[in-house]
Image (cartoon, rainbow, N blue to C red; front, top):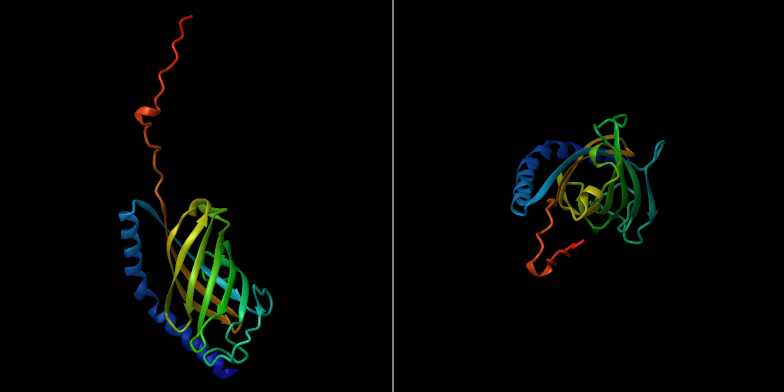
Length: 211
């Protein structure tokens, strides 16, 4: 158990060291893509609290993988393990920070040898200008990498037809069961356009009032 915890803490430290290196270029690329496509880029930043046990648990394993024991994950982990989550999204890294939404979805241990999770999650926003909107995110989360990139694959409300990416980095471990993940969401949504003018053959002459 101590060795597993040491391994996790090492990965968290590595994530923090590499976090800032990837953010700048990715953000610039997202802005350029939005400009080329005449879309509107929306940047969201918050922290996700994934709590897999103990008080305040927000993530529960629903499938015990039938695959082999996993060599890169804590003892008891198996290929195919699947967890459902309803994680808090907060403005700051502290769990007591202002709640801005929930991350609701699943993640599955999807690599036989690497610590890689396949993630499908909806970020349901509950505060601020985007209250009631959701962002749909999917991709691979390799927890051995400092900054992971997942895809924005859609959304609802203000994020209808959204595309883009999420920079996903482990911020810190509050405990063995509580991981804090920092999310930078770069979502491009179609720019609002005025309706096109009517075509000539669509124009009907106005009826004359001779009264």
